[in-house]
Image (cartoon, rainbow, N blue to C red; front, side, top):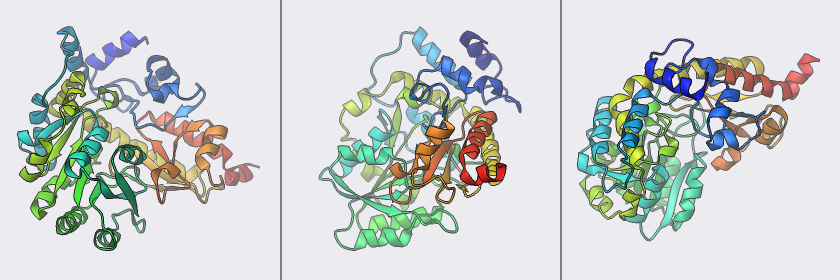
Length: 414
C-alpha cells in the first residue's frame, strides 16, 4: 500500500476491528519497517533501521480522520497565520473536560501556549517570577528537568511511594513544605509519567490542602489525562485546588491523546479567578508561538475525536495486557508496573541480570530503543520505559529480542 492509499484508508474506514488501529488502518500496516519509510519524526530517524523504536511518546496509530479533515481544510483555505487567543479551542476543551471529567471550565480561564512544556515554564515565570525551590515527585518525565533549567528554581526530588503500588508520598510532601527552607512551587504530573498512575482524588485533595496552607503554587501537567483506562477515574487538580484555596494552573493538550505532538498547541487553564488574573500577564509570545494548525487539530480532537480516543484506549489496554503476559512468561527477573493511564510501561530490570545500564544493553544487544530510567530522577535507575501505542506484533518482537539477551533465558535455553 502506498502512502496515498494509506491516507485514503484512514478517511474512509475509521471503524476499528480486532485487526485494525483506531483509524481503521490494518495493524499489519503498522509494521515498523513500513512506518519508517513513511514518517520522519525522531522516532523513525534517530536509530538505524534494524532498531525497534519504542522510546519517544509518539503513537504508531494513524491520526484520526476528523483531525486530518480539519487540517486539510485549514491548508486548503491557506489559513496558516498567527494566533492571538485560544478561540474555538477554549470551548472545545471546556466541553470535553465537562463531559469526560465533570470539570466545569470557564472559557476565559483557558489560555494558549506552544506546548505543555512551555505552559509549565511560562506559568512558573508568571506565578513565581523570583524562582525558588520546586518539588517534583520522581521518577518522572525527564523533560521536567530540562524545562526547569529555563527558570531560576532549585529542584527538590520527592520519590513516589512504590509499595504496594505507586502513590504520592504525602508525608514527604508535607515535610518538604514545612521544614527548612520549604518550597515555592510543586510540579505535578497527573496522570504520572512513567508509571501511568491516575492519582487518587483524595491524595490530590490533600496536596491541594497542603499547598494552600503553605503558599505553594502547583502547576499540573495533565497531558495524559484523556488516556485514562476504562473503569479508572481521572481527577483534574484544578477543581480540588480551587476548593482548597490553592494557587494552581493546569497545562495540557490533545497531543498525547490523539498523537499530535508536533502540532504545537496547548492550553494553560486557571484553577480560579485569582490564578486567571496571573495568567492574563502571560507574554504575548506564549500565544503567538502556538501553531494555528495545532489549534484546529485540537478543536477537532476535543470536539469530534472521542470515539477514536476510546478505540485507542481499548487497543492500548489490550497491548498492556499482552505485555504483562509476555513479561511474566519470557522476562524472568523483570517487574512491570501496570499503568492505568497513558501508553507508557515502566519496567524494572534491576533483577534481570543486565547490570547497571539495562537500557544500553537492550539497545546494543537486542536492538530495541527504550527510555533510560536514570534520566527520570531519583528511583529511576535500573528501569526502562516502553511505548505501548503500536501494533501487538511490535511488542511481541521487542520482548522476544530482549528475552534472547537475558542471562536467565540464555541458561534455560542451553
